[in-house]
Image 1: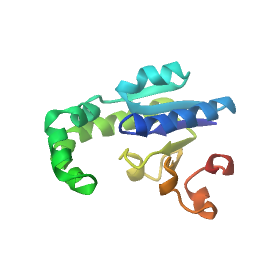
Image 2: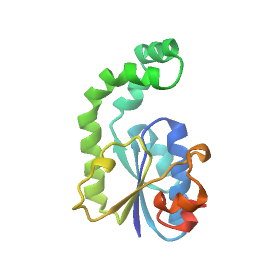
Image 3: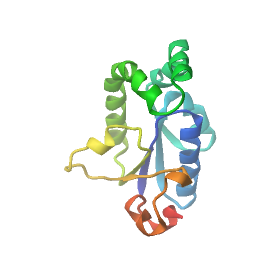
Length: 157
């Protein structure tokens, strides 16, 4: 099977998906990781195919203005709401890159972090299936309902 794995964020958002990609490769699947361009070398070092998302997302997180907003707002949603005005400018590039990766690789299924935005809004006419995959144990649903989030029991463990 051909899997695309989509994630957006910092190293902590990407590393669990690199591990998942290596596991899928070890089982004989074809895998493409779609993540910020800054992680191309890490993906290549692991032998995982890679499609870049624009660098500007992580650059925004590292900017002094963003650090000030995050530091002044505490953590959580307050900081996120203050960053929306900056994030809107990045949206078109992110959406275009996400779609292009899906079209170019033509996966059978996409496993995705909640942050990439194109997948939850994809038309029903697409030939691949999308599965929300939550890498953090605290965010995982109970074992019985995990199959809604992962395409197989092996991946849900």
